[in-house]
Length: 113
Image (cartoon, rainbow, N blue to C red; front, side):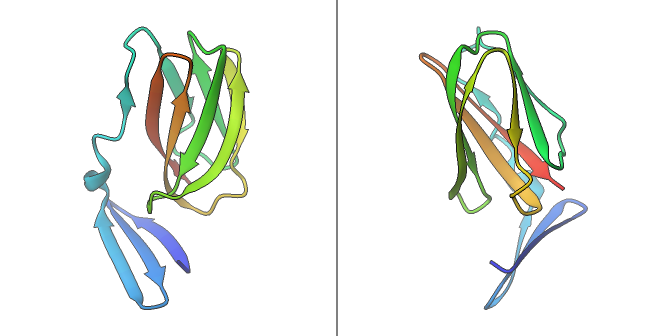
């Protein structure tokens, strides 16, 4: 992929073979919590260089960030109720962050500007 841009409600990905377009509403349904006792918030969204994570029951979790193509582009371990993940190395676009704790999973989409 050579470029990734968001215009209005559409995502455009420039490839060596042309341009791929997807409506952003096709990414709905991504936000998911598998244990309703766990409350996790991601801020800010959209974000630039740092994604902050606030959670009520985070002691230790694995965080994985996936791009719009489903490839894992970053992994980190988080501990405690407040965490910051440096995403300055990511290109602009739509990503999904997935947190896996001992008995819970949370995933949320976010936009990197």
